[in-house]
Image (cartoon, rainbow, N blue to C red):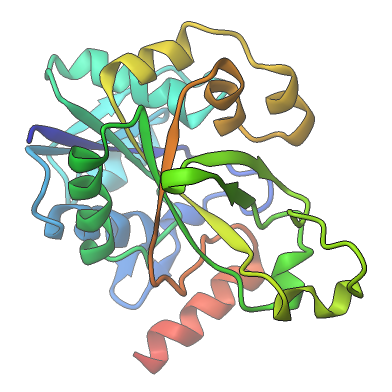
Length: 248
């Protein structure tokens, strides 16, 4: 199995600028993510794709494999593909791990990649059960519904499926709602299909890039992970992350 990991690391963030430089314990957020990917021990190479000299300088402290990409990509997936092309590496699986997910540990990353080698799908991604009502109805939490063989039918910011005849504050007691974890393992052909197509109607409506390939008929297989982490999107997320690191 020849898999590479590419971490798209943008300097700017709308809600929390410069967040990847922020420290959690002894490492920055981006360094935590990089170390987790290396320690997964399933990649022939772990690359960081940056769009800024300042980010490059920071990542060079702990990583030798950094690729400078354009700063006007519409999505992280477009940045991943540019970095993949620049790398000159030929891989069976190209894995996109988000740079603001410091709690996605090496064991979970390894499970995802190894599962893709077995599943034979276009894209392997991860999900976990929603256990909190606030998360279920939060638009920042992406929900997914599954069909046979854990194939994704749809991703949405809305709580799906809708449970008729049950009060909404009781939904979580009557159905296993699933949350999408933003880590992807692509085949080369599926990655090419994404970048060679324009944003789809559903993608633009929900502001979810994974809907582009789904709308085209490509398959996403989802693996359920026992994951209680979260991405760092706001200052509240960062404060919560500091508290968690301190406890551990």
